[in-house]
Length: 374
Image 1 (tube, rainbow, N blue to C red):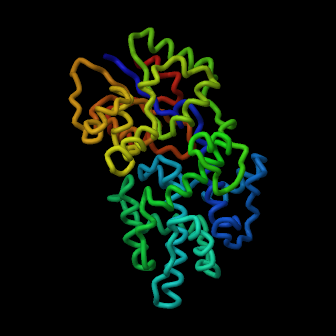
Image 2: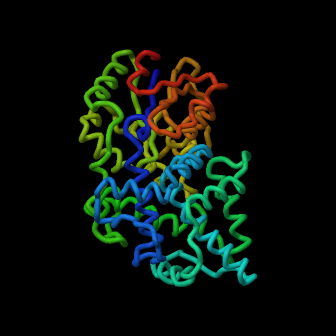
Image 3: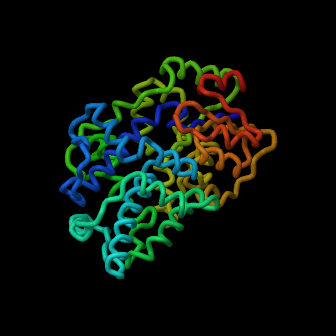
């Protein structure tokens, strides 16, 4: 068996669209009247206005010219949902710190239901909203070199526990996390697709959807030809992505790529969500190897427990190659014990190449160039 397993964002598609949507999600949660409704002097774009220039300025303001994104990626945070969570959690935590320094008391605020959102906004009203520079400085001071991956949230919660009466609601995959994830997905997918996926109308109203702005990192026809040539070399191909299945299938169909894959080996975070419900565990998102095992051996529920526990023996005659752009992809490949090809140059702050200098891994600046390696 020879198989090439592709990540999607930063490998096949640009991640820029996701970064834009992440910024708009933060903008809604902090400043929209249906969410926290905090005051702002910044000229942030209206969510209904899809003018790319306005969206770029909102992203620049909130993500600090993407410096915050770069920091989180350097810590192995690959999911935009988790990036949004880090930003919103830190914003609330720093506002709580200000309250504590003024009063000597911990702030009593909690967002676990939709009814809690506006109440929290009233509690936070009047406190200073930290800007991107303050958030980045806080992360750099708190999250030292020994904090990586999702464990950074343990460090953040420990710190916020000094200023908040309750921090459990700020945990990853909490109700709060799920609520802002749904905000993100409604903006990205658009309301019609959101309803088809979740069976309910979104809290943040009707959105047109940003999925149409997804842009492949090479001409779609050339990527399709690459898939075909890889298969001609005797390899099978698969997908391992932090996207949901619907986020994967739609652009793949639009680019005529879906037909090149066996859908049993298109592994997404939807599979991770399924195992979480089935086995009552946290969602095993990247860099947990679970999604990669689904791509390698099939999305078979009877194998989920083995995938989750890593009880998989690789045949020494088999050859698996993970193609990714992130530290999370590399860490998963290393943990599984398979080869890794790094895609660099698709994101302006990519630090992957520097990390791989001391590793036995190949880096290329375009996914099309992996044909020269296989």
